[in-house]
Image 1 (tube, each protein chain N blue to C red):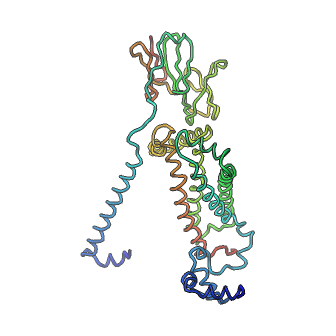
Image 2 (cartoon, rainbow over the protein chains, first blue to last red):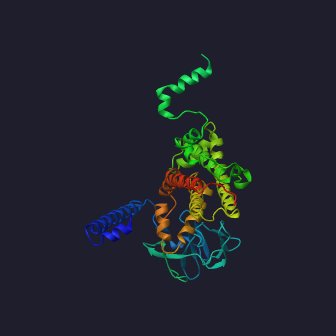
Image 3 (cartoon, each protein chain N blue to C red):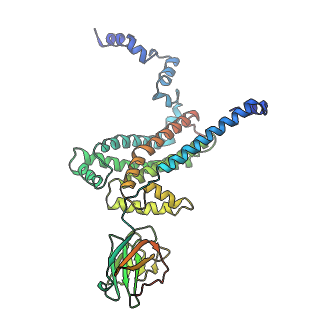
Length: 157
Length: 240
């Protein structure tokens, strides 16, 4: 557009139409972009639930680590009680693996190492495994992998 | 009637004349018309200085990148006849292409190796342009277009990675999308929209498929047209 000519037209009809037209186009464009963004945003997700039952407390021996790789969670029972760790590596999201003989948890992708209480032993991860919510419901342990809790949270049973 | 007479008669028909509007007498005018009355040829300049055709000026790296892009388009379209972006069909279709379909393994390997080669040649092309100072004015905008094309090449390579739906694909996309998530502010939202959910599943596969087969190649085609046109307008290779 020849801005000098518009400038010369001053505050007349041409200027009014120019800004009205631009405003209308801008509004339509912004509306279209917003609808587009909403379009690519899925409304219903068919994903596994983040909250699930893992079993009765008495079925886990004291001082044990039980891995459920399909649901990406470790259930740890200590002398004090239970806690659950997300098995998803805090570095870039691979599924870690508990190695009984080493008494530690390893990530196969980039070699991070974690203790069975979730604390970081070796990088490239910069923080320990997420401790996730665990509660007792109808005599069964229920884990919520989306809900992160304090690093020292333990469920006493 | 010999061949020359036949040619004369065909060239004189109204049908021929409607497609090619000029004769082929060797004149400057006709040489120019040949180039700019043809949609494919007109991307090229009418005249190219002999000096600029020397191989060592460009090593033909841009041309090789484009040739690989064309090869990838052809092999990619052929692979699409057998591939379904669904779980578990995607992995089975990949296996079927590899072991059952005639020439399937050849096509798939051509597609894969051409993809690796394209990334390599785009990098080399960029390095050549950099070291020969061809990014300097008046060609600085074409350097920017080139950078966008490099990004598109990498995104095409990355989105294609998920499609075989094997372990390598799954974990490569896990790691890659977690890197994207680390971007400030928009990271988590961008990852969610890219995957169409929180996990790498059917939605993610379809999204990567559409990006890989339609959105990114179209964007690349448009930018390639701009890129070539700017090369022509800026005078191609002129030794500095």
